[in-house]
Image (tube, rainbow, N blue to C red; front, side, top):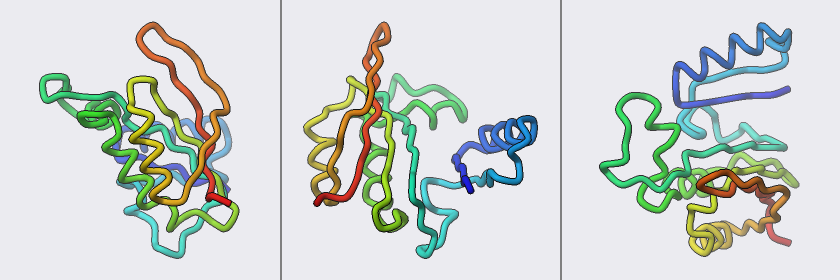
Length: 144
């Protein structure tokens, strides 16, 4: 069973339509949620996939409308990542894993400090270069 969530009502609507169109609507629950706000503390997941808004964004860089929530990672690109990491452990089942997109535009040292603070270790699974950044997929799991 898959649960997908997004803060954007438009993204939730599109995901539901895509699930239905691809005949997986019964296997995929799509909910509107600001990170884990729609879930109870008892809700546990084996895998959490997180594609955060990661672009370092100054006040002048912000775009108007709902698209901003998909792009705006705060001044260092870690604003939502830090919030996510601080809450994710409460919803990760024992032995659970997280896959997260990380950009070369984010300060890796601060990200690693945040992971360490929450007893998470990481491994880089894949990376791809684009014209202005390199994206990586990080596997996160409990230390030890």
